[in-house]
Image: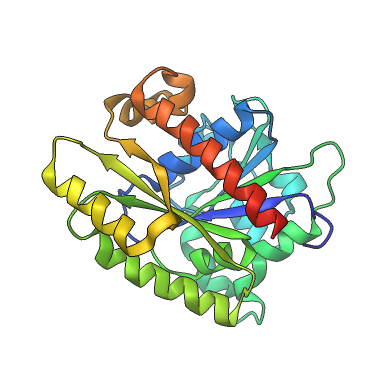
Length: 267
């Protein structure tokens, strides 16, 4: 992957909103950093929730993913440190809302993020992992994130319409693989917002496991009030309350992700 061969790029996407995508991105990134990995989160959602959840005030977002995509800044200029040691972030601003129109006529419009990663020459910071948080839609930003990635993680809420949305996303994944990024792998599906008392949630878990087998992570992320509270304090749940069930689940998920990473990197 160009000059930054060491980085493994993971895109976290689901076109449905409210499935725990950003929560998964920031807590997985924090858990990876906690085990000694150096991590960069690229916030590609105009809402900027990953940036807020990692404690970056809107006024402090001087260089953002907008500048990265339009080529006005590189990763080195855009990446800032977060409250989590070894975890850096390229924040998002509302400027991203209009960026698709700006790059639409460009021949490399799907590869803007990929090129930015390839052009990054690490000096003081070498990222082990780059996690990209996508907007809740299958737009050009999400396509950019998939084009730049080694693999895709899909958070899936344990609810009735989950599988319907998943099949649409997997179709896009296959299209990206066949046209834009043949090396893109499906890293895994992470089941989120699970409530064991809910029969429907149990049925969704069973259906998704039957449908996708070992592509579904063993770890299931429970519905947990501490996870919901954490962003309002500008902290990942793992920092806000390490011992809550949600944080513990994300630490478990990180260890599964690292194991799969080793297999995928070796393949």
